Image (cartoon, rainbow, N blue to C red):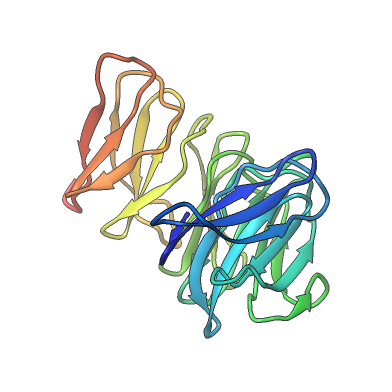
Length: 245
């Protein structure tokens, strides 16, 4: 993760895990911190200004942690709720909360109020559920909603404030993370089927298309287009991401 003058690398693994910040200019080590519990994870950190301070939130190695990305100082931590994580955390500006989904072997979605100090396991979880949990694809927040695709291939839309399920819809097995553009959320399943959904209290399918091949990679959005890397080496699909789909 790039942050100001730093390249920050998460090195969680089954051993002496650590996180290190390197100078973008010359590769010098600027700070290094040890990671607890010596357990692998696969998540990129989330860096935002949250609760009036710079925070770098990370799931992995049997805990959820927040550090100051400027110097690696620990701000708060939460035990568990599982051992390994793949999906990265997301932030909702409307609630001011951080949301996580994972993992292995236990399955949880948590909404976390990120303004604590020290160990906040018993004090800062705003809601929790075992329904709709995703191990691989990262979720997304859009407006008042938190959206995710479960391991069983069901798309869920939660009220980000209450945790109530607004709707659920079968999307098919999915490894690609969710993305959004113009207030619409894009679900791409492993068969390459793209569903464009407008988040809300009821399921609203705006458009549906197909890449025409298997898709496991998360899409990228640039210049009003959605770029999708399929399984074939012959081409990369390009789909419009405009709101008039």
